[in-house]
Length: 256
Image 1: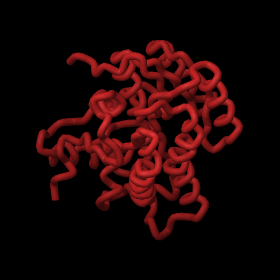
Image 2: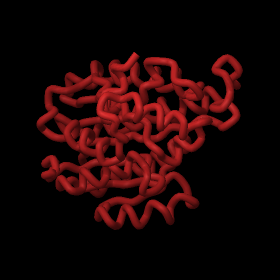
Image 3: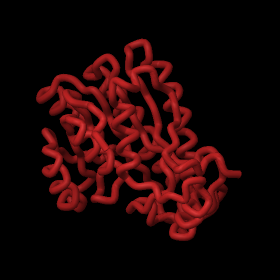
């Protein structure tokens, strides 16, 4: 398939942990379409896994970013402003909840675990948008990743359901607020994919099989499928698309 043309666009991708990451599927497709990329890694432990991937897509900027650390956010956006001076897109593909809160009932979630999950999985998208706003070109595209568990109860998804619901709502408000500047904000809601983050969900293998067995296409979604949607939403072909939750799940969301 011919790559979607995003040549000349510059963007930041946050959330690559390894070559199974959804963010990596996005990075590959955007690079194939001609985009220049800035890629971050979450920690020194993650760096050896992410750096070779960043090199393979000729990332112009490669920098550390723990979204809970304001200094690292300051440093990253200082580099983006100095090197590029402008941005055409941001892809936010990070989510986290402490294991003890993710594996239990929503009503038993600790205050600390809930606040951490909301901070990293939801508020960080708003924070990236706020810091990027002065650099964003007209028709810039901000993307984040949600999941069907934001809309319906998914067994064992636990506290991440309410957190992703908050993220989807934030997308709509951000789209309204930033729309007058021509900035578009959307979420992609992928089908169940075997990523490192998904490994923390109890009985994930069962959930994965059930998703494939139930979706109309009986198809296992790949990170490249998500990358194709991301490339479209970044492209000028999506200039009238904002405030949406875009499912890439082989139709699973229509099944009762």
